[in-house]
Length: 217
Ligand code: DC
Image 1 (tube, protein in one colour):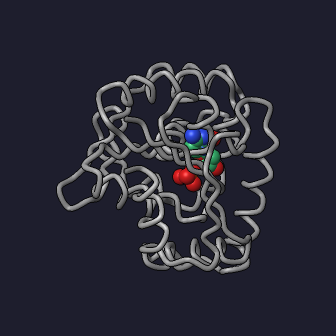
Image 2 (cartoon, rainbow, N blue to C red; image 1 turned 120 degrees about the vertical axis):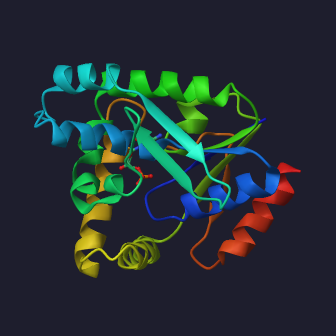
């Protein structure tokens, strides 16, 4: 069974997707982490991220592995190197929307995601899972929240990771990413017609997971 979870940044997708996957005994696949890994590689290699062919080639020659750890965390490996914390850096967040709008990069990563998803039951989280990656997913959710709540959640999350950021900068970055992610030509962020819309603005994590769990069972 495939559970597809899409929605904008900071809506709480990762948190609920991880818990839901654990409760269902499914594999958890964070597709945003894969776009972040390619962005990290491009920046480390000094590749011009606006040179679409170069970034596409780089993605084509990359290996990405996602490992579900026993404690519920996810480890991300890029070419066999653990990049789990590197991909959360502010500089990656700043450029990831530019990398993820490149058609070739999306083709490469969507192929990898389909291969990962075909291995068994899983919860995939991203922006285009229900619309493009697995349009036939048995269960689709679109997780949303007000812009203000999303910015405040993301700010707290970054603080927890000891990252030195200002809340208004986080809000600005989020709104900028929303704009790029929703307006790009290839696979823009969009709710699939058959996805269940959940507004988490006033809900706790437990309430959201409970709701999703009931709908999955
Ligand atoms: O979920 P996240 O913030 O880690 O995602 C990082 C970026 O990757 C986000 O700005 C949009 C992009 N992304 C995408 O285009 N398609 C996906 N399936 C997942 C993420």
